Image 1 (cartoon, rainbow, N blue to C red):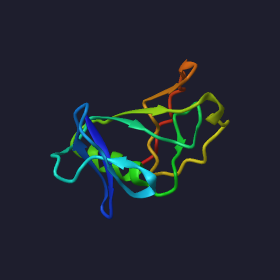
Image 2: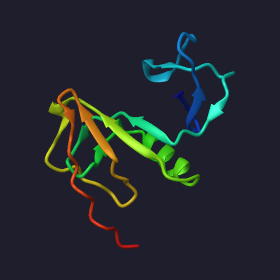
Image 3: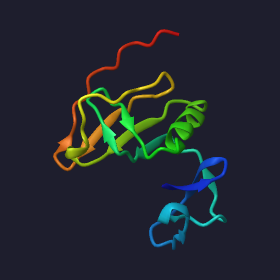
Length: 122
């Protein structure tokens, strides 16, 4: 398992094992220690402020996860799973060309069926 650490260069994921102490990070977060090995995960649980049924999400404004997903995708597919409360669903997220829809979405009510995203023109 890896946990994210916010750095000036973006998110760094560090190996973490149950029982290991976390340290105080920015934004009031608890983060893994700097001496833990970095990892490039192939699956991410992605935080969000809002989501829609197309799997688009609104994050918390800094773009950390968008950048991490883009970077990690260069190594191969990255499974993305959004976790939210059902009240965070909105009819449509104003997605931009660089946004990548989530693969799965889960709320306290269970898995949210996502409609397939339209094919992008490149």
